[in-house]
Image 1 (spheres, one colour):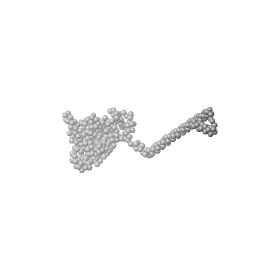
Image 2 (cartoon, rainbow, N blue to C red):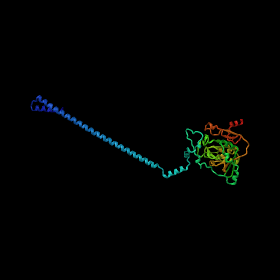
Image 3 (tube, helix red, strand yellow):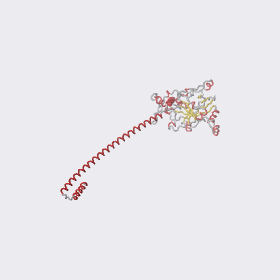
Image 4 (spheres, one colour):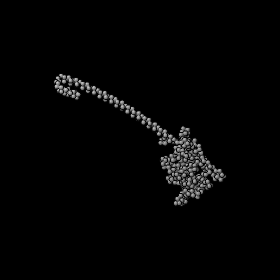
Length: 391
């Protein structure tokens, strides 16, 4: 509308200047023409602006799509690069951690040479059902079953028989294999009153009468080292033929002397011996084990029946150690058992010592035997003695 007004002013000014009179009809025609022209120009301007805005919008959309495409491509490239970097890192780590071929071969050789009890158990599954114990396995632990027939080298007895005439003569009264080939409880009672003989390397002879024993019934006995067919390098002598020596260490410093019997994993613990010969040597062995002068003085005052009145005391006095395991009392020249004349005696049967944590049944089972009234017994059970006196 502004151009129309300006043109109108121009027209009026021209008419006035020229002293001309403008008719109303002419004025109206002029206004109508100018108004139509302005409307047309305004429409064209609006359409032009609209076209420009659409084009700018299309350009913006195209730029946005291009930016998205480029960003997506950059992200894909970064993911691929990260993946390649991680793969390379993993390959480098694997190469770094990979041990040398020589070390692997040495390790495999050591594992092959080492006794693998687990593989023996696996190989024995389903082969020999006779080795299965008569009791059900616990729910928490699988039963450890080993095919002992495959362990020929481990079950082989150590041999060191008497060779000289003197050695053969002194051990000529040893008890044979048939004496030991009996049930564990029977052997534990039969050993009472028998004489344990030790021949040292220097020729010294030590003798003592067995006065106290304990029986351990193998795979069914919770207090036994072979409970549920447990097999270790230490307890293998318990699976060996009757009469085999089994010596183990307890508390890291004390030894206990056992003899295998009939039955799988069964053995008899020798708890106490009454000294008969070599008492001075036994006393020396007991006193030499202490370093304190005060302790030595007390030990020198030991009485004869106190020298071997306990499992570890017996092993100290008779010089018995772990390396004596697997020898047979039927053939070894260093230790054997002889028969001896003795007055008739009564046997006290009572619960074993030191097994209070193996259940009431096996804790209270009367598997300990000792000669009634003998002073060399490690610990008396007055309740059992009273019962024996009444009967």
